[in-house]
Image (tube, rainbow, N blue to C red):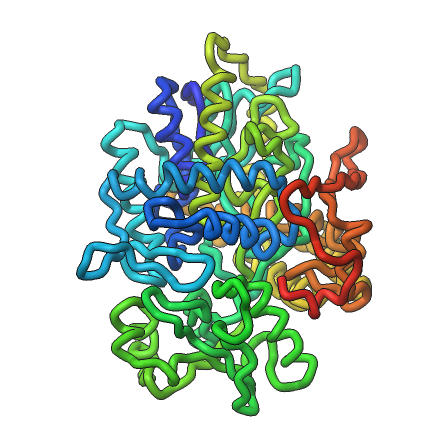
Length: 570
């Protein structure tokens, strides 16, 4: 089996992984980037609508900075965040992130006087250069930066296992080159896991095909502790039809340069969410929108898969066209953005939980394994935050690898993993793509927006049935190793079952509702018992146990002990 070497291996080609690689390169560490898709062209980062969390380059005041911190801690993480990490991250974004991006050539939308165009209100954001499409130029820039720096990239290569020395330290990976079908090893002094969010697990999802919870499955099999896996976020305003447009969002937050935004309208024609009237921070986080929708569904005025509408019929169409990409979406559907509404539906967005890390170092609970971005359970996303994670992970890895020898890869473990992969390349009764669809339907039906113990137990039984009976009968129709996406789907399906089971167990363990995590059998947010990390700890017998660790609240605290979650503004 061929073996490659890299001082530091970065798994993932999104905002977190690319910035980690750039920071390592700047510190004299030789990184190698492995991406399941194309670096800068797949995953969550390319879908970023704008660049949220504003910085000093926008002329922010101390009051703006406090508003930003409140948004991040309360509205965006429901207090499930290390507040010292949030403070450090906010300072870095203000002082480094935006100025560095402009210096590197990313164009932030400006007015005729040269001022950066921002969203209005207490919390401001910017776009590069049109709202609704900022992730594409952002990731194009990162890809070009890696190429200019000469950082090697292995694209369309899926990592299937973290390889560990006898000490338990991660010392490399086993990977499959999708294009050639070659299975090979990479030996590394440290690994940065930056595989992004596990959000292609429901019937409707904002994720790309690459996102099948690989990072969670990889980390768990290596013995990593996981945290807050139950905290799934949702988009409320994605286009319902056509089905393959489910990531096209009619964003109900303020348009850049305008106080107006899309409104949500129920099946009876009643407006049930209007940004300017309903959100005090003037930047409606998804949880605020979701709670409004839940009430409409319970009243029979909407469904999670449609029968409610969004649009800009109260806004000057020229304004929508000038500052956003949304007018184009309406045109492609044959609608008039200044008159018509479009039917929308819920889509699973990013997952707030993931691998447990030390937010000061991004070190996981497994030696040699560091985490950056959405696969970590320390914060709820945003391009700026995951970029900061890449920087912190790189700083830690640079210290970790200094004067450190390469550990020997355990050949028997690599051979076992290669044999497992070969075993998935076989004919069978059920195509892997159908298995993935079964998992997504099950998660949508019983692990959707509103959950209860009975439904989650049913989901767990369904997943266990898939593991026991469906996976062994799963097989591909094409047995070639070259560009075999059926083989890749089979690898994905195994990861999805494992990760989804852990998510259901975590959801059963958190006996409250909090933000986007809504249990009908535990409707209250419980800050006495559950302002805490919900940690999954693997045990020596192959099972797991739960631990609960309270979050410190030095800067912001909830204003109540218990309250109906739907009545909580954040």
